Each structure stands twice: as structure tokens, then as C-alpha cells.
Image 1 (cartoon, rainbow, N blue to C red):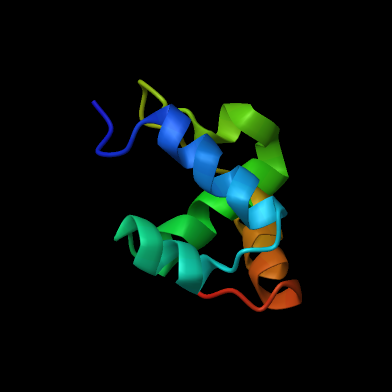
Image 2 (image 1 turned 90 degrees about the vertical axis):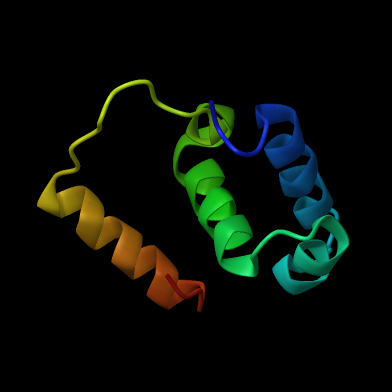
Length: 79
């Protein structure tokens, strides 16, 4: 089971879309801003499905990993 529920992740994403920054949300929900940034990235790449925990160990292609790095650079997020 995931440490954080899907509903909580979705609520945080919605608040982020309303203009609240990851650091503010981090303090409000007592969750690392890096974790929140990862959720935002997953949501932007895959939509709501990206917030659900996979039951299997997913292997990512080099192309996908490169797209994540480019996203982080373009959006000035850290990992």
C-alpha cells in the first residue's frame, strides 16, 4: 500500500493547479516538496493514472528517462 492515498495526491495536484506552489503545499501537508514535484511530473506526463501506484516493478526506457530529465530542466524542478 502506498504511503499516500491517491485522493490526497489528487487533492494536492488540484491545489497546485490553483496556483499554490510545491513548497507551500509541502508545509501544509507535511510532505517533502520533492515528493510533490514527482507527483506533479507524473500527473503532467500521464494524467491521473500517473498518481496511482503500480503493482508491478516498472522498467523505463532510456527515451522515457531522457524525457523526464528534459521535463525537469524545462520546469526547473529537482529530483
